[in-house]
Image 1 (tube, one colour):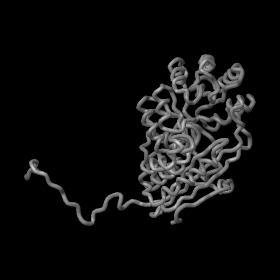
Image 2 (cartoon, rainbow, N blue to C red):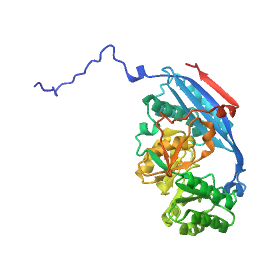
Image 3 (cartoon, helix red, strand yellow):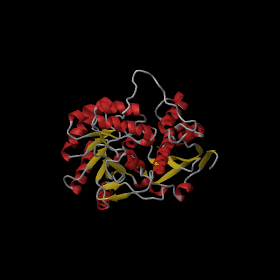
Image 4 (cartoon, rainbow, N blue to C red):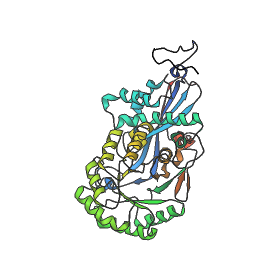
Length: 397
C-alpha cells in the first residue's frame, strides 16, 4: 500500500470543465410586489387604545413579494403593518427589489445582508428590516418548494404539530358575556389555549374577567393574559401578584416592549411566566431581551426582517432555554415553531384566512404542518381584490 508523501507540497489539478457553485446557480428574474389591505369588520381595541396611544385597529396592510427564477422556481412571502406604516414599507420594498434581480436565490443570508445594507442609512431595525421580510420569506418558501418539503421539514422539524392558543375572542372592547361565548366556541373548535386582553384602568375589572374565564375553562386549561405594554414597573408588579392565583401560562407585555431589564426582573420574581418580544424589529433587540431573562420570547418573522434573522433568534433563545411563542402570522410561524427545540406555542389568528386559498389544520389543541411544500399557501382572489397597488421588477420568466 502506497503512503501519502507528507514531506513535500503538491496541488491537485481541477479538470478544465469543472464549475463552481457560483457558476451554476439559479438566478432571480422577476419580482412582483403588492400592497394589500385586509379590512376588519369590527375595530379592535387593546390597552394601547384605552390609554389614547393608538386608535382602534380597522385594517392591516400587507406587502406581498412573489419571486420567480430563470429555472422556473417560485416563492411568496409577506410583511405587514397595523394602523400605519404600510405605504412606507411598500415604498422601501420597491427601492430594495432591483437589488435582487440577477442574484442566486439560494444565497439567502447573503441577500438579506445585501438588502440590509441597501437601506442602512435608515438603520437596522424598524421599517428597514420589515421591508426586507417579504423577500426573505419568499426565498425560504422557494427553497423549501425546490426541495419538495414543507418549510418545517427543510429546517429540521422537532415535531409535526404545535400547541395553539387563540387571541381574537378576548379583546378589551368585547363584553364579558361575549368573551365567554367566544371562549366556549374556541374550546369546542379544538383550540389548545385562550389568551385574554388585560390593561383596564381599573385592575379589578381585569381580575373579574380573568376569574370568569378561568371558571369557565376549569383548572389546568392553558390561559394567558396580554397587557400590551400598559403598566409601569410598580403597576406591573401589583398586577402580576394579583394574577398569580389563576395559574396562567404567561403574562404578556406587562411593561414597555424595550424594558428588557424590567421583564427579566418580573420573570425572576413571580411564578407565572413573563412573555414579550412581539414589538421588537431586529435580532439585536431580541438578543438583549433573551439575555435579560424573560421566560417566553415572542418574535415575529415579518417584523424582524424575515426567517433569516428569526432563525438566529431561535438559536440564541434555545441556547438560553427560553420558551417560544411567535406573534401573529401563523402561516409562517407554524413552520418555525415546529423546528424549535423546546415545546413552543403558536398564536391562532383567523383574520388572515381570506388572503389564502389554503386552510390551516387545527385538531386537539394543536396546529398541524401540512404536506404542502414551502409555506404551503397561495394568494386568493379575495386578496387580489383587496390590492390597490402592484409593481413588477425584472423580466417575467
